[in-house]
Image 1: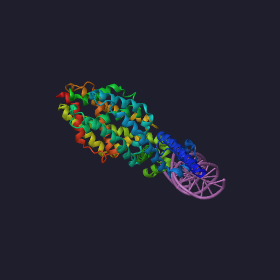
Image 2: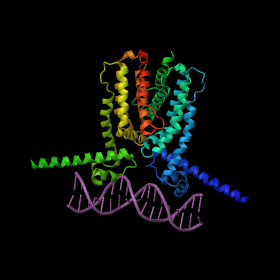
Image 3: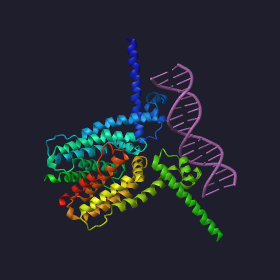
Image 4: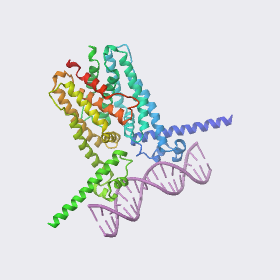
Length: 208
Length: 208
DNA sequence: GTCTATACATCGATAGAC
DNA sequence: GTCTATCGATGTATAGAC
């Protein structure tokens, strides 16, 4: 019994360390990118020794991949929860408008999400498989779910629901990129409401 | 006379070195990003000594800023030339469709442009003033020019030309990001033509 | 102005004690 | 499993010869 207890206790300690490492590494990688983040700094932030980093995750790339995999899973919840229409029976005009507003507000206030996207794009040359994980696990489900919604509303009379989804998502994502991530908000001011109204009007125009 | 000749010759040599450094640094920064690029590698690529790098550009950040400033100016020509309608008198439906197709084809085949955008976004946390230079000198002129075109065509009956421009640019840019830069082309295939047609139809729908 | 040589810090990664 | 201590390589930046 004491044997099991000890084993459990040791495993818990080890797993707790792993969690602390992932948390500290996430903070550092999100703040400074892959190359500019040192294993020394991660060890200090996580409160463990550098050797413990390596015993848990092999090398720097291994730790980075583990961190990003965690983040992709985390953000999947956010993204999918966000674009799920709250009441499917309502007028698509209202549903789309509310959905776009919600997505915009959330992305604009979530600094972690912005840093996450920054890294995905910034490191997509060096880590193509990471970029593809983003596409497969985040962009694709979001696009497909929204496509299903469009297809289930033939009264919108959309010639190409899938391409229309690209218009909507692209508009919203690039807007957040320009205004927030690229600090363009003061240079090219534009209210969320104007973008959302314009987007919604364009998509629901044939409904009238 | 020989004095002037010597001076000129020396200045030319120095300026030639500076050009070579910028060219080599551009290649390295675009390929590996800021932090992962070393001054040693740049010196080797440019065919000069490391000390010459520092005597011309002060430090690594100075060289990086000089390179990116050059690139912003370079890409300004491309972007503005691209979205300038070829014949203003034609049906906007045809003009917009041709313009979108041209922008897409160009961005998709220009690897340097993709690397450039990758760096702008990837380093926008560490170099906010670089990101704002992109917004002021590239995004803003492009958006304003296209807005002027929309405003000069009231038959499009656009409620908000400026916001409509954001829809168009955002759709095209994010599409190139997903398909090319994030290597999503095989995961989420979609033909340029479908996107362009959908975008053009949405914008010119009230014209009918 | 440009080079070689080098100073000095920091990097990723590991050996060995406990 | 986790630590301290350290290795060798590589980073930015500069001094001094020419």
